Image 1 (cartoon, rainbow, N blue to C red):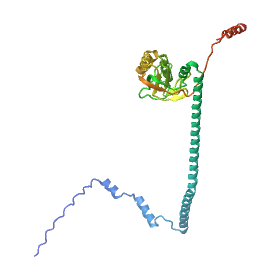
Image 2: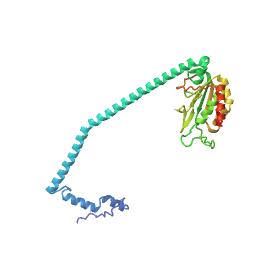
Image 3: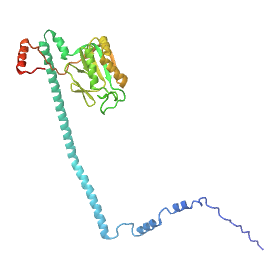
Length: 309
């Protein structure tokens, strides 16, 4: 009698490692919502969403043809108008270059005429200056000057911002250290009083009629704006002029600006400095009144009962 082989039990299968992640498994197995899946299947069964009737197909074809026609016409117009636009642009560039060249030529002519006028004024001053023609030309700034002197450089404090009401208002020195027009006025006047024979700021020659003013944050010398640092050259006995200026009230004022507001200054005696002539001359003369004129004025004053100032 044959024996049946023993039946071995397979046992319970081991649990899946991700059995505890049922929510994550559900999301992975059903990534597409059932409603979306049903709608997609229905659309595929109906022909993939394409028009099925002849009328719809003709309408779609007409729309495509119209879109292609619009794109083609736009490209053609752009290609046609491109040369016109380029031509107009080039004409505008040519006009700008021509006008710029004309303005440059006019500026050169003005500069030549200005130089010519200055030369004639200087010759006339030398011709009618008499024995003191050289001294008059020097004091009026009619001629360039070179000789020993001092070089004084004045600059704003570091990290000084522009704008606002400016430093050292009339109510008090409460702002940061920017060099102002009143500072340069005191510097120049101090150099004159210390014995300077000629003075210039950033190459701008000063005369007895020069004006130092302010326009916003800019310093104007004879209506020409200057930018820091301000280099002041003065002709005179270099070492003596430097010492006299630093010991003067204006030199002490500049030293106080350096100590209190950080304005940077440096002064040095130079063996030779060169100053240009003033760009334009305005010569004014005065003559003393004679005794006869004074008597006539006195009679007129007595007659009218009004005094003169």
